[in-house]
Amino acid sequence: MKLHTLFKTIINLNEVLNTVIPPDKWEQRDEVLVGTLIIDSDSYEIYLEPMTYTVDDKTFDVINVAFAKIVNGKASRKLTLNNKSSSKILGAIINALYDKIKQFKYDAIVFIARDNVEKRMTLYNRIARNKGGNFLISKENIPIINGGVATVLYDKDFPDKYMDRFEQQIKSK
Image (cartoon, rainbow, N blue to C red; front, side):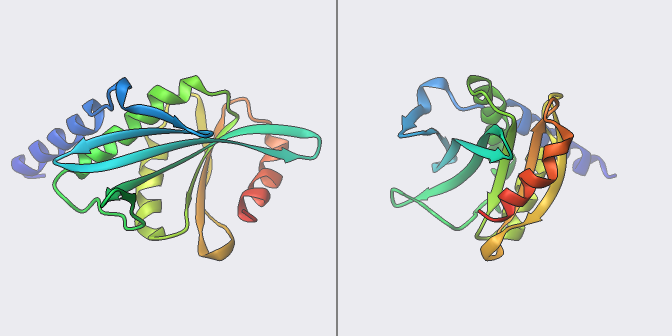
């Protein structure tokens, strides 16, 4: 690896690890916790949405994680992380997830993409692979209805016997 490539990688890693959303940039919108960040004059929102799934007689608490770039005051369906700040954006999302997820009771974290699936899942899977020690990835790129895809992170205590049926419910959403 060339020295300038290594240096760029280290800088990008540093941005990933150190970019955070200040606590005053979080707000509750109905059931969804929304974090807003501004990077290089672009606004982004991160959404942490609590949900429940019932498998047989057991109910599981789930956090659906999503994010969007804000364009003209509205969440854009276009994923625009192809700029020089993509490491900062990724870092902010990862750090926000790790920081705020502690406020929730959950059995699993779900990342779902229904538009720009390939790009979003690349990013969501990167986030999932940078998870904390309390998770294992059951499966990446689970196909769901209408051409969507999901990745699920389970709490380390999630019962194995429910995983397949839980994923079947994710597929049908």
